[in-house]
Image 1 (cartoon, rainbow, N blue to C red):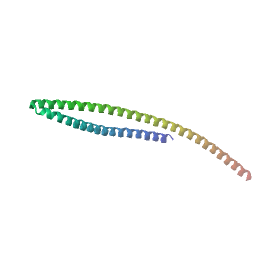
Image 2 (tube, rainbow, N blue to C red):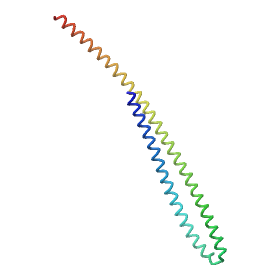
Image 3 (tube, rainbow, N blue to C red):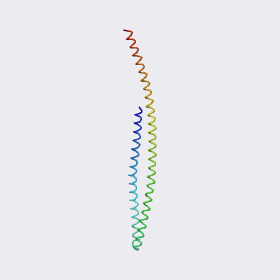
Image 4 (cartoon, rainbow, N blue to C red):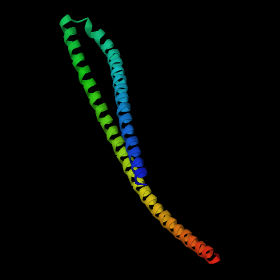
Length: 153
């Protein structure tokens, strides 16, 4: 009985571990997909805005164009860093939420498993008592039959 309960406990723990691993993989894919999309959108928007502004300014001096490009590059870098940090914060919050949910589920499974163990132990005790009672009845019947056979002889 205890071995079956231990097997159930081990199976529950293995299921929770597998869930943790798949959450980590999914999180990695989601993070990468989001970063790619954010970078592409920001670059496209900045390119369009920069093209119009750049055309107006590009016909000034080459030094002015160089300075403007450096400023734009720095601005893009800051914007990308800000977007990345925001995504990292959101992902951290999502990861924390998932970890809490997994912990809650693990706790619930362990509690249910303890209840099941208790129920199995109680049921085994009941069956053991019933078996002992039946065994006693069989012993008594065997003695009665032996006594009757002896009295007939």
